[in-house]
Amino acid sequence: MIGAAGGIGRRLATLLTEGGDHATGMHRSPRQAEVIATTGAQPVVGDLIADNVEELAAKLAGHDAVVFSAGAHGTGRDQTTLIDGKGLVKASDAAARAGVSRFVLVSVFPEAARGGELGEGFEHYMRVKKSADVRLARTDLDWVIVRPGRLHDEPGEGRVTAGVAIEIGDVSRDNVATFIKAVLHEPSLNRSIIELTDGAIPAAQAVSALTR
Ligand SMILES: NC(=O)c1ccc[n+]([C@@H]2O[C@H](COP(=O)([O-])OP(=O)(O)OC[C@H]3O[C@@H](n4cnc5c(N)ncnc54)[C@H](OP(=O)(O)O)[C@@H]3O)[C@@H](O)[C@H]2O)c1
Image 1 (spheres, rainbow, N blue to C red):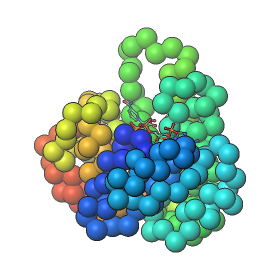
Image 2 (cartoon, rainbow, N blue to C red; image 1 turned 60 degrees about the vertical axis):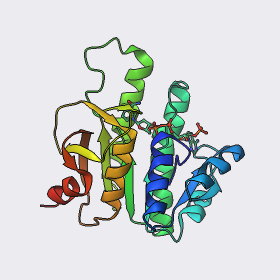
Image 3 (tube, protein in one colour; image 1 turned 30 degrees about the vertical axis):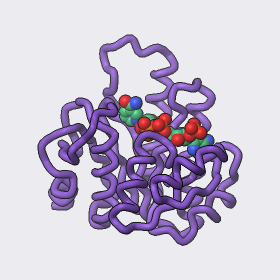
């Protein structure tokens, strides 16, 4: 998992290990190893900016899937380009090199914050995220792109609305994690872009419906 110490990453790592999966959590700051260890995942130091593709591939090798939930979280345009943009390119190239074909990317609704005072930083973020989606969709990986609505930290009960095109809304980080866990356990959901908000359908059922 890339971005494992983050809001979604931590929750997903915990859900996976609680369910009996083995997870490795990549983090760039050594002090985050402890945060990751508390989720039950194995911490590994890795940096989407500092590491090259070969170094990242060595860290991804042997896994069944990669989840990319890393992001610059408002630290500036250049960081957004390097992490959300070039970082995704490196990570997807590394997954291909390591022979890990399953790749789940946490992206964003294309119309997020539409109508608001976005500012150039947010516009840049949206452009970079869309380019990352385009780049991943052009690979031969077994990718799934998940586009959450507005993230929040209220507890989620694992119920969602998910579809290739849905109305934008809020979604708890708990529910994003629960949904991605279900995606990881349903390999037939593949090469799909899924929009996601809080809703009424249990996540596993929502994933299953998307495979039909
Ligand atoms: N906020 C919203 O409403 C919203 C809506 C839709 C989608 N999203 C997307 O959802 C993604 C995940 O959300 P979240 O809440 O989990 O984000 P988060 O808490 O900011 O987590 C992002 C993680 O990425 C890590 N990271 C940053 N740069 C890295 C690098 N160079 N190498 C390796 N890891 C790096 C961060 O580590 P550090 O602590 O070292 O920085 C952090 O652990 C966001 O990135 C965003 O693009 C957000």
